[in-house]
Length: 115
Image 1 (tube, rainbow, N blue to C red):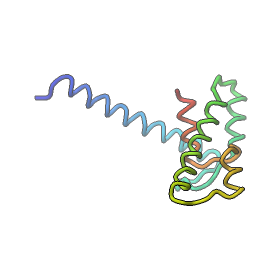
Image 2 (cartoon, helix red, strand yellow):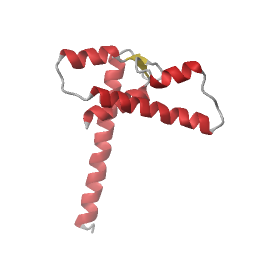
Image 3 (cartoon, one colour):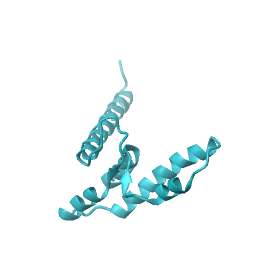
Image 4 (tube, rainbow, N blue to C red):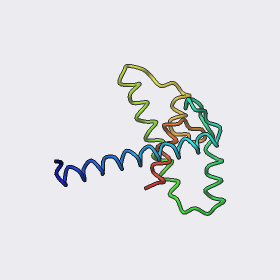
């Protein structure tokens, strides 16, 4: 017999997992619509996404979402630096640029907008 509290914890965890999978699917669909591929390796332009947000008058915190993308990139670059790597000029420019994004950046953008 499973206690009610344990049962409810299990249900919450399953719901959280389902919500995370749905969010990733939504991100993947939007990423693909912008030209991203299933293997998630392409960088896609963000301007068409911003245009859709503006066109439909969505009240979304785009500035905060773009900051989340930059934070995601900083985390990735910090991992490179921790392993003894260096950033060249192009990588430094990429750090703050949000014109093209990879899937991880795109997820950071999407998760911020969903809040």
